[in-house]
Length: 337
Image 1 (cartoon, helix red, strand yellow):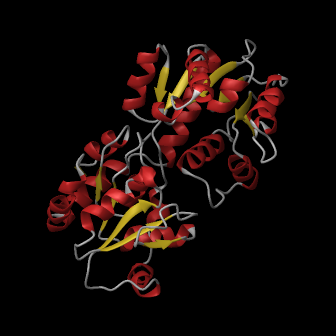
Image 2 (cartoon, helix red, strand yellow):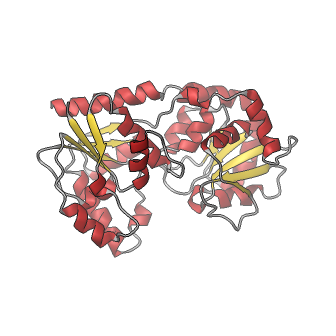
């Protein structure tokens, strides 16, 4: 059986893979990587490379020294950006880069980040394959000069999003929302996710706004914040009349929007990065100007069932079977070359 090493800096991805269950606190990229590594378990001997994990005690220099002295042996190395940039290339292995998104603004803010970005671009050109998550990033990688790119979309098992009606109906009373005003989930409590712009546009409107996350990074906003279990988070998506993802950052895809559509809740989004492909394919509303948000909400709530039907029909194709088949096929074909 061919050996695969998944190289990540994230202890959360490692811990999730070892336990066989996604650990609370994992972000969208962590979740994707955990599920991708798990998808390859039945066809390959796969493990997470412990040598590439970034610990709390390590700074960038120590991390670089550690991975630079590491020469892994495997048929396939799947590299996230940090291990790719700081680690060694291996001619004895097939090398796959895993790219969710690249925040150029972040990478150009100082010398250290510019160095990282420059080195990442050079390393990407040496990869046998780059896997990414949307056509937006496929085009971006082509413009960098990458020759072989594969899109494998974020995927979920639709069965995980089926909840009992009673659980959904009880959510509002349990978390102290009324039943008279529309409940709108505005996403992760983090400035780049657009929560400030949403609040500014809707501060005087008759809506109940809520945001969530493991930590409230927008605590100065007078918006209700919930730190939820996975199950209660899905209840929130179901119970909401609408989800707004007005990200100002360039998204890889947008897992919140995707999951909302699986819960049959319509979405309004900024369409930044790969999110545009998701929302266009799902027939949802895209706005680039937050001052137009109120009018967009009225339109979506008025035609809610139509948006729900179009959205669910589109996202249900990206299921567990699709995801596993794509990853197994992609790795098998690369090994066979």
